[in-house]
Image 1: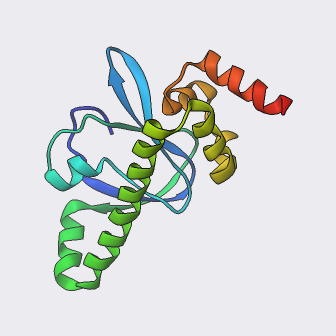
Image 2: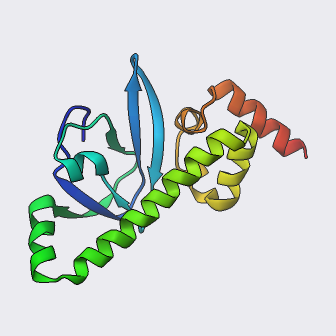
Length: 153
């Protein structure tokens, strides 16, 4: 999905890895990574039916289950429990977003890297280092220094 497009679908990642990023002055800034078992889309665009500032790209071959906005609305009418499932999924995304914001306020880049290393070590092997650096809010050179310091400990 590209910047300026309306997100019409929600996806469940059965296999693969993707990222959500922004373009700022021609520079890509990673906002989130998605792996197996996660729902992905540009939720603000999906829910408000407005153009997105977010871009989603796959980083490796993916198997995705797709649910359109229209079909989701039908499911809400046909199976009211769908509301509960969607709310739970959105709660998880909200908690992830709040944790990320808190980490940028409270933690150093090295602490953010260590948290990711402990919580999601598999992601670090699957994503390019320059994308990880933008996710952590640092340059690739700074990330390299952090990784070297950690290896020395």
